Length: 123
Image (cartoon, rainbow, N blue to C red; front, top):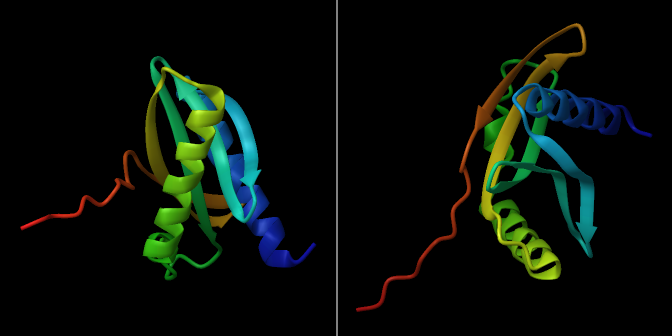
């Protein structure tokens, strides 16, 4: 496995631990549907949370900058497909977690409800 893949997997594990410490139940890790992958699916109370994790070793590289419009659309499609396949009554939310550093010294920045569907306006 490439070094950047190892870093990404470690970042996902760090965020899963972060969520578990805050009372979330980890439902799925690396859930896939075709080309769509959702890093973490967790639940807490009446919420089901789809989490995209962005990990960077260097603190100068802002992990949130890697969230492109295309990635947001893929997450929305994946979350919708997951919800439809499970016929879930839970309230969906898409969060983004940014991990900076390495396993010895890192920081997690967590943004709840970071991705929302764009509504078209009609005139």
